[in-house]
Length: 308
Image 1: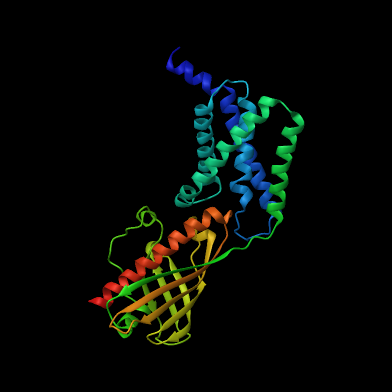
Image 2: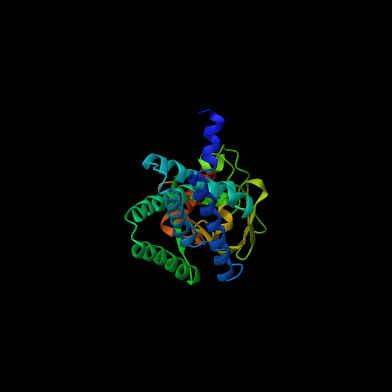
């Protein structure tokens, strides 16, 4: 059989039908979920990344049950199924490239899981069991979509600086543009990274701006100004973009300067944020990693300036 005939056969097979129907189902359900959820919350719930991909896998398994495809093929076609869903999210839901890169392992993993669960379900041809499993997943989806979602976390990092607190303080309140190259892989591929900080006045209540790459600006207000010891600022406005910045609210930042009594200072950076994407056991790993790399990019720059 020629290559063109093989391709034609695949495109007209149950495999492709399963993938198409699964993706249509997913977008219909997400549309229903969006209409049920409170408006303008920006929250993406557990079900969108776990339950829906599993149901997508189960749908494909029903179409594939008589095709005779094996485990490796199921895995490969399921990955293709997940990638199509991710591409559709990029074009129709306006999600950013980095956001979709982060979510792709989660979606692909649960699409694959659903396909193998579905294969086990349809092999037994136990209709009561099959209906029970699908009903349970849909029930979880409905309850999760209608439930309140809130997650707050604090990330803390510290760095030893070979300079006095007085010297370090000069570069904590505001600092000149960072010239060092990016060393965090997400920053290298386009995620906004901190570049400079400006302040209207060196006092309590002053306005502070943290300038990120691509022109993003976080507007801040200084709420604690303990010279040479402690700086706390609330974020009063932050940019919204299709990447992770649109799914997380940075609430507050803090720098603590600890005098070690030997001419060195331990600089501690703290950040508080609210996460709007669930499940948190997955996304908080990413949020913490990104926050820590923001901390260290800024603190290493302060260290460099202070030790000169």
